[in-house]
Image (cartoon, rainbow, N blue to C red):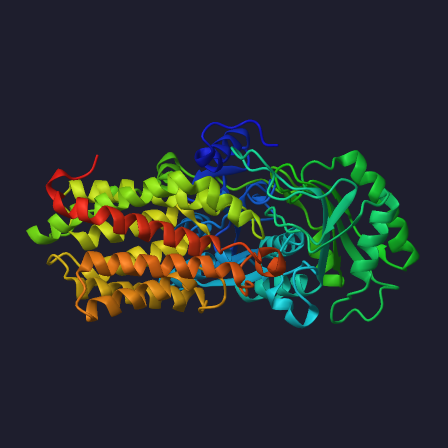
Length: 590
């Protein structure tokens, strides 16, 4: 159990602050995460990695010469926002372009891709290789859907070494993709991990049993078996990975391989060494020569009792890059040359600026739109209160087949959105600006898939509603439909995939139908909220086809999708609050 924390919603921010304070030799704090303390040579490709917090030493612990140039560090088990990835990339980039790499999870893909597009639009070349090493998460014919676990390190290390050698962006992408293609991992767990503030682990394994095929975000395993001896676990690991050799490796006999035996948090070094004793023997018997193995905690999951084995099948090029020197807070080998000059105080201050949107000028707005902004802000306060009330419930639902972070992510996002909305409204912003500022803050603070989608929804609503007038019900319906279209376009989910889309589509459809029928706006909203609630409940009977729950599809049967459920909770609360809020807009918010 994670025992030492203050406010659970501030845990990720505080751990980054403490990490930087303890490792100033290597890193500096920048908006969205950390970057190397010292500047890199002009024209060197910037390798930027990242993901949710809770996996130390991934991701901040891998920033330094020979490895990453920056790490975007999201909330607990939630991807960093697009703004965080963009900000870290801008801080790390020095004329050679940006290479992004991260585990293949829906929220990470959504946010990193958005940051990549923004960088490319600004003329900064940016490319990506996602890590897909976990053999348990999808079959070989669906390898692009596999998630990244401890194999992150092999891809990051190869890419970082190539950049350090002076390779250009195309070359870094090529060798990183090759490393990913030749990396395979499998993991097991004896118990789940407990997030800060939670009173139970994200999943439990029966006494004497072991979950096989776990994820690193607290996702349960794909199957269970009796707990083996250390030798038995080594046999399971090695036979599983030798049973799926990558393209180009026809026979393990005669091959050279980098090997990582990774502890996930509670299985400690002494136990890992006992297991590795047999791993090394079994690989030797199979004719594999192990090159510079790593045994220890390299990609963790809080206090999860578990371990994973990773094999990178080497060729001469990959072996050189795997063996190259690196010097980071948590991963070191060989000898690195002298560091470059440290940024000036002014530069460091600029890089550490959190980019608070409150300082941005507020566009002019009509009196009617400013009055509508007061209503919008009050409804966002209702939304934030609803997420505070249901954060634990949403976390429990998410933990059934996911990583349990949905509640805290929604809570953080809603709180940030409310703060931004209040600031804009108090400076006489119109309704459109209030919504757009709230959306930006939600996305940046919450991260993850839900953070990106709620941020997109609010900013789309704001853009369509604008600051010129008090929007009519038909304007709001059109804006809602635009938000639905934007979410479907970015997230790629459709009705039936067991996502938020299953609730938001019937909500938008029913709202428009009721208005077309002549219903009053408040009545139309209440009917639409009921449709969303019914649709969210119906997701209990669906099998997920997207996101982190997909590998555990059968486990989610009987439980609603957390994103659909939270959407239904929010629109129901807003529908109930609207009559009172709309009748007293002059009172503002507390």
